[in-house]
Length: 488
Image 1: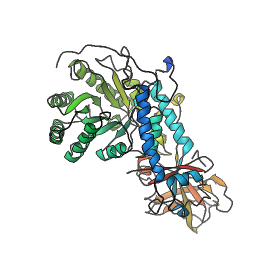
Image 2: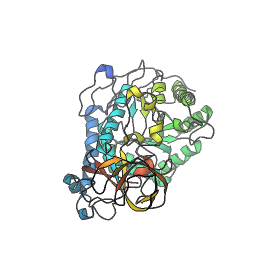
Image 3: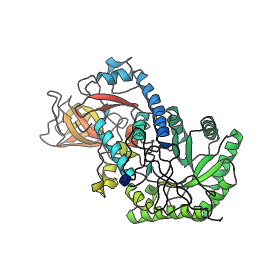
Image 4: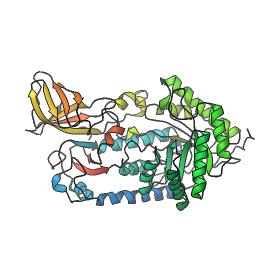
């Protein structure tokens, strides 16, 4: 089995970085490590500040761990496909503690498995990568929507977790996450009322949110004033990635107009700039780096114009999906000295499980192999339920079980129903998916029988996680050690 990451210029200054992460040995000076307690990452000529410190980081992690631990008390029943029918009524914790075999322990097909070893490898690799490049890291939680994985990411140095929607933030807050980067503008009054209440009730809750229009600022301000917010929401101006790209202001003039609008209201506080380089039209290395340098130039212009105040405690610059984080790391190293410590925040998400298709082709580690390699962690186990001809077979998994938006699943291995032997899926191709069936083409002489299990590699983690509410975490020998709950 497969091993089932314009005003006056403010005064320049620098502050010390607290080097000690939570529950870990202090890094060496050469490592320039970003730690779970680090609020900002040093730029050349200006060291970053850590206000909460390692003790506060450890406390944040304990809060998340306590909430995640309660997931073990959930009862197993008909809601969770692929789990053993004889485990109905047991708790998730009891099933995990039983350490059943995925193959002989009563699990039914199709069943999605997540490699424990590969997830741990990927999380550690991106922790090391962020440290090496002096980046803070807020992995995008929309990929998995799995608090158990968020906990693992936070334990391995993540500054916080990125969200795309207020509904994501609600899940994160339910599991005690204290630092959230909301990579969208929020103009829904009901969502803003809830966010205001969360910020008022919890002084330790840190939220950073996009703004990308003057109208958006007006709507946010109106809703927050009506809600009687106790403290402002920290916002970053989103710079669009170019003509025809997704969200974000298109020009420097528009960005300054948004910053001016923020300055006129008391419900928002401008703390930086952000964007998503993955939306650069016809992206290549040169165009992505050019856009990232525009982002850096914008934050420097804002700082020179005093947009962050006279003595900002932190200035945020954020980018970084899963395809260009090497370019982000290199260009963010060029951030000039600013009037406050800089939080250089990377937001990649798909690394946690990686995949066998889209991100296997696009990962920046293909360009920088000396920095490591991510491991695909997903395998969808299916069963042959029909073998009508020598060239055709059908498995019991389809569009409701497997991601198919970027690539079709890829047969990788066959587990022989007679012997339990696992062998490569030579001569087998998946040619299509129905709702509940996978269409296999088999070459002449291919060994494949009704009852055999076929293990599929998947492409696109975001549309793999969202089809499964409870995913077995499996060791390389097939032992199920935990179950990953998702909340989509």
